[in-house]
Length: 365
Ligand code: SF4
Image (cartoon, rainbow, N blue to C red; front, side):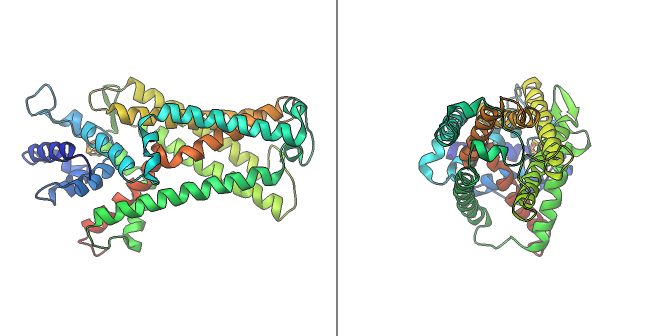
């Protein structure tokens, strides 16, 4: 159960919204709330993840603090989302990582770097950390292929299993016994997620830095497409290696390097831009625990992007071994903490969008 206080508080605030209904015109969350006569804890888990935190309802509302009604939907929804991530985290014992995201990220990256550096020292000798390696297979002379792939696969499978179990539990709760995941609803939700339509905030964008702007949507898009490009770069490198039998490092104009460089630059700019926008934004509709999650996750993405770009730029120099340890350590930190970080927001949000698409068509989609 989500905290009873938060459920009751959201029920109260949404009752006030009933008198106005202005935001219903541009926000799916308010439309979904109107379908409910009373808000229970599973409704809160659903509605909170339908909210994209554009904060335009805060800007538009006449009942925000210091008004006695004290309506602050974005802050309450953010608090409820943090509780959703903790409530459905698997295994439950690791949910406490969500309470200290910065420390968890720092510890995971530091441990990752130490483990990779030790593996390099054991495999190729300590000097490999500062000895240039050139030509095909240069990376694998520093660290063998299997030592990179097997731990990466193990962490990915573990993380994916944890997220899937949590989200399945979440979908069961918000579905209330009704099956809502259908192909048309999934298709509609994917379209809404890819276009970040709810970050348009009704047209003016998100309420940040004191006004509506498209900055958050733009930077979020860079992060999203940057991650996808980096993933595509990894897949294309695997194809070149395993099917064309070309070992890395690849030429600057090869598919993996072009995709990886473009993705890395987009990710670095997007993560830095989002961090800056959040820092400069009005703090009143923000929730401190969500801000902490945002900052830790964006910081991790920034480190992964910058170390990846540095590794590409200096791969023919004596710094290659050390940069490889730092980059792989940062990637390991990102993947290990993924199920207990802001990373999970896109999965919960997608499921909420699927339910919303299904609800809008009376369950027929
Ligand atoms: S912050 Fe934006 S998405 Fe969230 S409830 Fe308000 S208007 Fe809707």
